[in-house]
Length: 98
Image 1 (cartoon, rainbow, N blue to C red):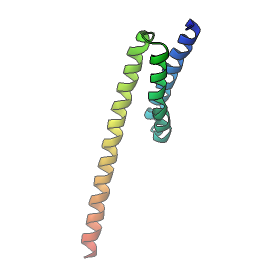
Image 2 (cartoon, one colour; image 1 turned 90 degrees about the vertical axis):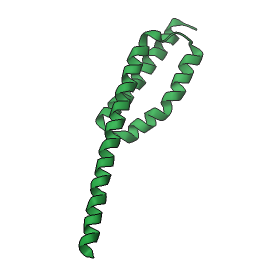
Image 3 (cartoon, helix red, strand yellow; image 1 turned 120 degrees about the horizontal axis):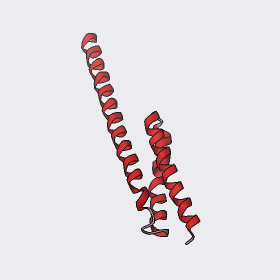
């Protein structure tokens, strides 16, 4: 296991995590979904091939994931509110048509 391989994997993890965060911040959820589907495999590869070599970037990865989680919760709340508004509008229209 060369240091160059470890450093490449560190950069790959950080880059992928940042790309996921950027997609979430931009509301590009299809892009985020694609990146997220690759994330677990990338983590498994990194930690099985290079166990214990990523402690120094762990805080950054965790911070990114926490921010992503917050953005997902906000998006879900927004969608729920929009759905509720649409539901009420449909109910009002149905009531009017009666």
